[in-house]
Each structure stands twice: as structure tokens, then as C-alpha cells.
Length: 325
Image 1 (tube, rainbow, N blue to C red):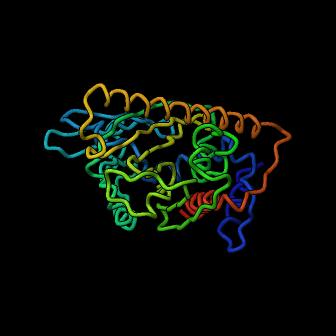
Image 2 (cartoon, rainbow, N blue to C red):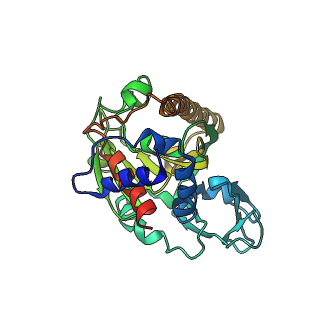
């Protein structure tokens, strides 16, 4: 399938009667589309890079390589953050922005600020006190799949029944309805019900917040999800047409940890890390299987479930970036 044909199919998602089907399989394997994404999406978008705890002191740094172009974010002696391209001084200086403890970078140093696009999200997450949260578990993994396969998986919970029967599916109802609201070109809010409201927490959460998972997706590949006492952030950094680096962490407010001795803290942190490892492994196995199928000459588009409106929202954002940059 030629690039022009793939882009024409993408444009259809911008119609009011957008097709309720998945992207063409070629969209997950096409070298030509990958090159277009490198220039029109990844080189111009805000990418979730790290949590501030990973850049706590002067000189602390984090390096990631979106589209194979390494960028290092460093905490300067005056406390500010600076991003530098590892490809040399001839490359433009990337933009970097810290929002409530989450660090974003944009290879385009002239990009508009991200914070105004997150204003409503910040208001709705006030009770979680994100700026005060600390990271208690983290991970960095590489999955053998196209980045869009990983990202669209994070835009729906319908897959939990098949991939997470003993983990995520235990707290989410089978095929639970998802409420999707597109905030801006960069931000989409996804709400999903829990099977049962979470127990009262150390945070001032109301009944709706205890009964609902709040997910904020930042296009193209970052998101944070609130689960009662904890917030999980995750980012899928595209490395190649069939490889993605998955980074993330679990955040908790100190109030939820108060009164625990070091042994109890270590045990809780180990449990959180082990739980994240299991869920990530389940997702990785599933996403790598989808990638293998996408590369088959027998692969065909599949219908989207009414329970997957978040996937359509992601396709629309992708189409805007690729066809109307």
C-alpha cells in the first residue's frame, strides 16, 4: 500500500462519519509512513520524557531517542531544565517543559507551550496533588511493535478481558464503556468505570473519582492515569517502524505513605513494581503478536468496538498531524 493511499485512509477519520475500523495493516509496517511520522509527528510534538524525581538534582539527566534521534534533558544548577540534541550543536535546541512533576520535550524548539492545553486536566486532577507526588516505581522496556499499536492499546480498556484477565480486568467491568473528550489537538481525556469504587484514600477524592479511572492522553504517545492513591504515567517512544521504547512510573502522594516504616515501604514499592511488570508483559506479548499479524499478507482491517472510541480519537489526532500539519 503506497503512502498516498495510507494518508487518504487516514483523512477519512476526520470526517463526521469516520469509519469504525482499524488503520490499514500497512500503517504499522510501511517504511514510507514511518519517515513521514518522523518529520511531521515526532519532530513537532510534545513527548512525555520523565518524572521530575528522575531529574531531581543539578546534573541529573535523562536521554531518549524518538525516531532514532537522541535528546538529553538535564537539570541545570539553577534548577531549570534544558534539552540538548545528541546529534550535535547544528541541530535545533529542543523545547522542554515541566508540568506538575511530569517532564515533556519537543524536538521543535519553537513549539507552542503545552501547559495551556493541559489546563482543564489540571483542574480536574486538583485533588490528586500531582506536583507533590513522588515516584515509587519505574520501568524502561523495548517492545517489538509499531508505536501506534502500543499507543492505541492505551486508548481503550476493551482489551483487558483478553490480555489482562487476572490483573486489570479484576478492577474494570467487562467491556466497560469509555467516555472520551478531545480537549485540544494535543490532549484527550478518557474516563473508564471501575468494577467497584476504590476504598477511601489519603487524597480528598470524591465518589466519582473513586469510581472512575481518569486517563489523560497527550498526543502522540504519552498518558497518565489516576487510580485512587496512585497515578501511573507511561510514554511509548518510537524507535523504528517496528520498535518502541516504553517508559513509565507509579506515583503516590506522601500522605498515602505516612506512618509506614521502611520495611513496609519497601514491600509496598516492590509489589507496585511487580504488578506493573506483569501488566507490561501482558501488553508486550499481545502487541508484538499484533505486529506479526500486521506484517502478514493476509492481514485485513478489523472493526472497532463501540467500546473503543478512544482509538478513533487517536486516529483523528494522527490524521491531523500527518495530513494537515
